[in-house]
Length: 229
Image (cartoon, rainbow, N blue to C red; front, side):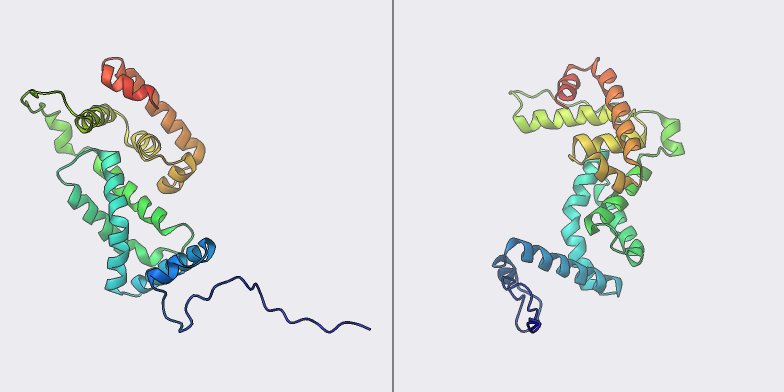
């Protein structure tokens, strides 16, 4: 005699998101198990993206505000300190608005925005005809410090020297190296951001590092920084 089929009730340890069906509040998300909380956050992001693609300005503003710190950091890593950084950030988000309808969710949204940021940075690195004609500008003369520089000043000086050396490296190699050495991304992640093959990214990093090491032979501070990589 066969046993009657048992009703499949699903796992019993899943906490309901919200009994009312409303979007969960942050306190509700914090009280969920880690896996469930992650699913809730992914669902919330997908909802924001769908609303933004449908023309919801508020949802687009939330996404832009969340991604802005990373966009600023990526631009600074790749390009170094710039007076037009705010304009470049705005360019990234204008291009995001144009590209958003084509986002299909094949990659994380942060990767999608990162790819746009890298493309804006790459265009910025291309010298204009005016820049090619006028040549390098002289360094500004600053008064020597009267006391020993603090750690943050030393770090800024090292980054300034690095970006000065990076100015002599072609944009694709420069971008791959800075994302790897300064942003801590893996070659696989860089390949996704730059729409390149992983072995191509590895080659760009290798050649950029070799060129920087050659430049470091003339700069002991840069040499010390490169030896840490």
